[in-house]
Image 1 (cartoon, rainbow, N blue to C red):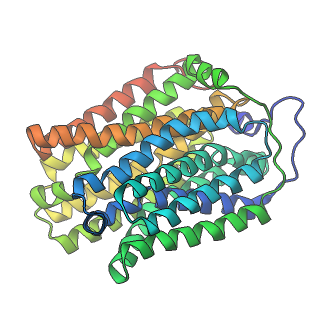
Image 2 (cartoon, one colour):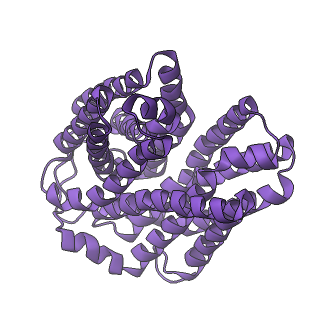
Length: 401
């Protein structure tokens, strides 16, 4: 209960806004779903994008890297730049930028235009995530903060289950440009919902860029960010090449791989809500469990994943554990910096997206240099590192206990 009260705290002297309640929380969940779907959309469309824009698939993959890196940089910069404005028009404006990026991507006649479009998507994605992730605490009563935060972050997990596969399916049914147009249309629906359902949300506390970066000096914040960096880097080092692992280690065919990834995604959604319920009471405990279980599931894949049956179990456990990373880590930072929630969220988004790019990079180097099993062991080792940081570092509430 003490942790929940800390999360629900409002900066001194700032009046409580009129609550938007659960409909507003649902609109924020729609926003996180949309921005993550937009970020990851090229994953299933690299071949047709490359063919249409006359670049290799590897070059087309830069559309994902650029968006992640721009999101990592823009989130900490947008927070102080827009910090004095009401959050409702800020979120609507950032969603409009995301829509513009997807429209431009759908029109792109050349790869350079596509890169510019993905820069816009990165700006919108980083800003919406940074400003929206911590708003649930201002929309519902304190006792509902945990479930509301879980619902906001469920958009991330659901995007991996529905958003990206749906975009890929649309690309196959029509073409890749239609997939980007569809996400732009979804963004327009979400923008309208945010404008209608969010109450006025005046700035709680204006923080400059120096204030955002000084948060890193807080050992509780630094510990939380360190755990995020290790877990997300480790996960994406391994998960980027999960299809190859399932084919080479488990002997799974392409249709079976698709089913297994669906199992992973569903488990991730369940893990999100399970972690959210526990993190509101003890974020350190939840992240310790996540780190341990993730390390075990990924590390056992080369050893025990030789059949489709055991691979299914391990992948489900993997999804269940990783599904809780976002909400548990965000809750840690909300408690660690209750007076600077948006600054903490901005750092979280920056570290998270930077770690996605780093994980894909180091995973690729390991795969090329030592093979797929080395990639999985690397992911497990980084999760063990996260376990050590969470156990030994400073946690919200004080101490190393």
